[in-house]
Structures are given as C-alpha cells and as structure tokens.
Length: 272
Image (tube, rainbow, N blue to C red):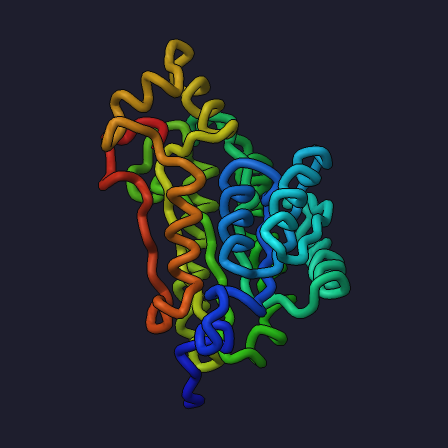
C-alpha cells in the first residue's frame, strides 16, 4: 500500500490550507453550493462551479470567488445529463487544471407524492440527478485524482435517509443509493489517497428548503421552522461549508468513508 503524505505543500509553506488545489462544486451558483464554493475559495482553492439555468447567479458567485484571489470558472451543466460528465470535466480542466477536490451538491426535490402515486419516471429522474450523474463525474475524475498525494470527494446527501418521512420515497431512495456508493468508493480508493465522505444536512435555509417547507405545510414559513428547529434556527449553507472545508483539509487526513449529519442532532421526522 502506498503511504500518502498527511500534509500539503500549502500547509508546509504556511499558505492557506487549500492553496494549490482545484475544486469542482456542482450546483454552485446558489444555496449550499455557493456557500461551499465561497468557503473553499477563502481557504485558497481554485474553484469551478456548475449552474443550469440562471447564469446571472453563477456570475455573482464568480465575482465573490475571484475577490478571494483565486481562479474561478463556471460551466453550464444539467445534472440530469449523465452523458455530459466528460465534457464538464474537460471544460474545467482546460480552465483551471486537474481537479483534486469534488463536491457533489447539485440536486432536485421530488414532487411530494406517496410511493404508491410516484411514477417510475419520477424515481428515475431523482436517481439520475442524485446518483447516476455524480457517479459519471466521479468516474471521469478518478484517474487524475489517483495521481495526487491527496484528493477528496464529498457528497452532499440528506438527513432524510435517517428519518424517512412520508411522501419522499424517490428523493430518499436516490440519496441512500449515492451514500452506499460512496461508502464502497471510500474503501476502493483509499490506497490511492482519495478521501470520500458524506455530509447529510437537515432542512437548510435555501430556496429549495423554503419550497420543501411550503410543500409539506402551506401554513409554514422558514421563521416558524426555525422556532421549532434545534438551537432555534435552521441550518445554513455556511454550516455545511464549514464541515466540508474540514473534511477536505489536512486536519482530516485520516478520515474517509464518514457520514457527518449536519442537522442539529436530529429532529422529529417532518420535512427532514
């Protein structure tokens, strides 16, 4: 087994902990992805983000990333298009160089139907976005990642795989499938210096989080959700970014195959 260094060149020279690394964050134009991309840039990584429809959101995030003094780029990528993984990776590599840090964050919600009323097409749609497309991207990234002293893959999952609330079967199943794949991948790739970890948030104060609250209770608001949430507030993108930045840092050099809930210690199974 190859012995890998536990520190990066950046750490040894006193630079920012992620200096010299190149990250790809899918769904990085807003919400959790934007928060993660911003934090990785603050710590010195060059960052590529993907967006689907709203180029203006991606432009705003790019300005923030570049203001941190790093190189940054945005690539349009439809997370339902697993065949587009090769072109996505090639575009980022052309702009920023080889990728050694991947945060799989792009996601969509299911329609809130019961399992009995959910079409097979709905299951397939959620599986494609949350499992098949991320796996396709990872397959494209692994050859270069294996050549590095340290590479990282972090998948943003959901606390829903713990609570299993009603009307969430397509989403919960897709998230659980990707979590299983990550646990296998962590064992397969650790000899190559590739760390694979999972972050599982509960309800997050984002546009998608607000839609989820409304979808399950039309009288709910994010303020009401905050009042009944752990610590009196809803999880933020910055909470998730802090955990991810730790997992990809030299401080987490002996961590792989972990699943970190970011849900305030759990909650009653509602929209979580």
